[in-house]
Image (tube, rainbow, N blue to C red; front, top):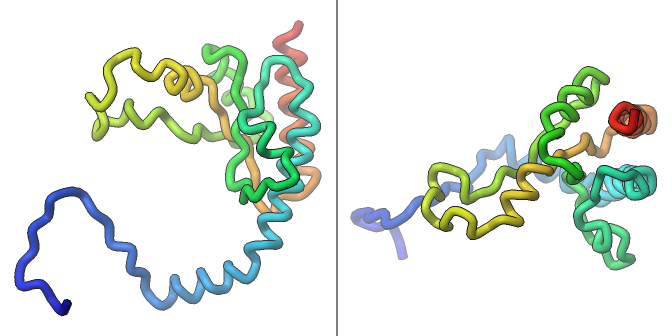
Length: 163
């Protein structure tokens, strides 16, 4: 106990101390946690109801998202495109429609820090999913018309692909 006279670092580490201002902000946000989680869950349910039947999209975690015991915070809403080669086009189309998409998360074994932790070809499913995943907008303050705009843009994309 007490202060160490010297330090010897054997691996990367983190300092998770936060200042008083960020602590106060965090406490204020905690009071809204259940409400914000519920709002995001409602948006995710609307997305799922509209997107699940569409051809060309998969909803990962669909079974767990629709389970009565689901405790997800729905901080992200990922979808998998049927064809990885269309991801850039899909994201560009969505951007032109005013919808921001993201990619969460790249395959970790492709990061430079983790190069060599897996042999090439050892993680084919991870690589496939990482190339097909796109994250749709989802946040507690999202208005119904914004959510519907995302869904409309996806339906327009589907219609263009089918033509």
